[in-house]
Image (cartoon, rainbow, N blue to C red; front, side):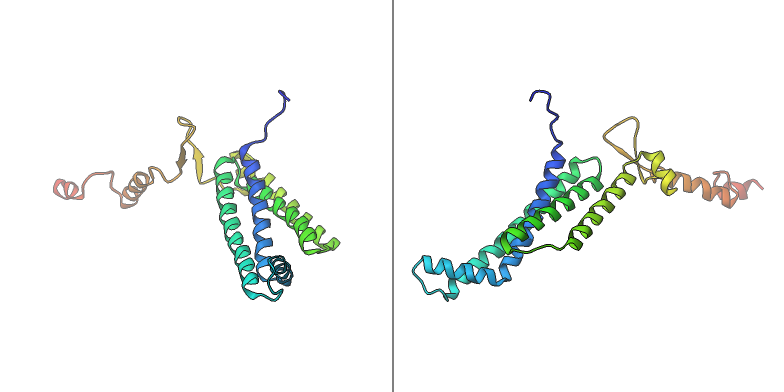
Amino acid sequence: MAGANPKPAWLLLAIASGACAAFNGVFAKLTTTELTASWASAVAEALDLSPSNKIVEFLIRGLFFALNLVFNAVMWGLFTRALTLATSTVRVSVINTSANFMITAILGTLIFSEALPGMWWLGAALLVAGSVIIGRREEGNKAGVEATTGVEPLLQRDSTDGDRFRDDDEGQEERDAVELDSVNGSDGKDESEDEGGS
């Protein structure tokens, strides 16, 4: 195990974020489905209450709604953290979406006894494949981006400080002033000097 290559932290966070998104969907569905009513009846009977006890049902639905909100918040926190750690936001999105699709399919089958038709699997596969293709396209270096899109990235790494990015607009005011002077026909002198000297 000493030679095992550890997975990057962003990858685990992106998968966990996708899983939280899947659980978020499950709890949202459990908040409104009839399955919850049957579970509430079983819980009420176990507590020696009437199976049609609405208080138990509302408490269980409230619990599922609260879990829906919790998993949503956790999902966004994990997703945001994965985005900050990864070198590519597209990779994080692809992994998150793929994990969400697969875990949602498994949970839907286990909890709701849903049978997913082949078209669902085909659609999910096409969405993931499209995301991977887009991700690979955006993985290129600056030259690759310029070659495929014809557009230079807005932010470029500053060669003196690897942690900073240089915005293309830095120094733009000075360039604009020089350009404006050349349009006006002046060479940087004050106009009052030109009028007094003539």
